[in-house]
Length: 247
Ligand SMILES: [Zn+2]
Image 1 (cartoon, rainbow, N blue to C red):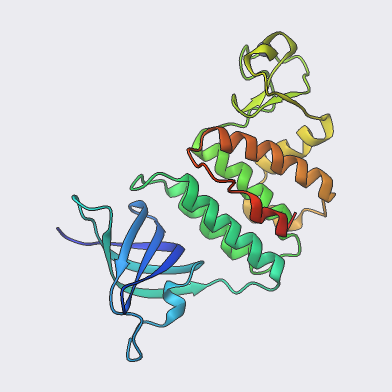
Image 2 (cartoon, helix red, strand yellow):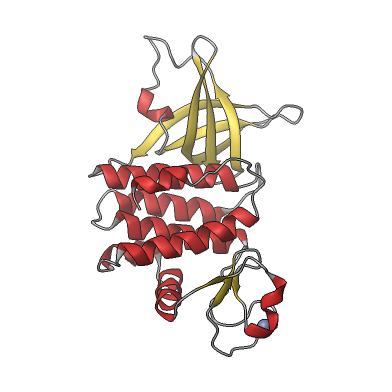
């Protein structure tokens, strides 16, 4: 089969056998794929290690294997490595790479996710508010995945009466009459709803201009985002533990 030449962001890397690595890539043309990149862990390798380091923006040829989960990656070249100005920016970026790796299906093309990821990497290299960017990314990511978050009306009956109850399972606000649809619903404040709506609307590239948002508000938004994402995940482990490093 002919290879697909595509741009990609490296999400994850594992060493494989003596000289190879297994990469998880988010590619522009084939969505998320897992593949082997052979013979790069040798002294004479012409491929610089940054090319297969998580967070790298590369171009590569992908040979899709129909019968195996493991595809073949070849001729990678580094287009850009997003150097992070602080530890917080780097942690935010790593958490984002991990989210994309965890929550996107294999081999499903989604250029919106690819561009959101690439743009977020770019702006994280030069911004003072990485936690805001992390939260804004998460809200936009949830929206692209189609899990919500409905913040302008009741997600069940579409009533536009103001309501301050939130359902992760249903992916948005629920009104008093519909609240029995989710026994695990939680309260949400008007202020948090307003900030979430703002972060959802604003282009990720414009997010660096947002003045600081109190950390307790960001923690709450992160909580509502996580209960929404978690409802759709089949992951048994607690995947959000590392988020404590920036929130
Ligand atoms: Zn309702």
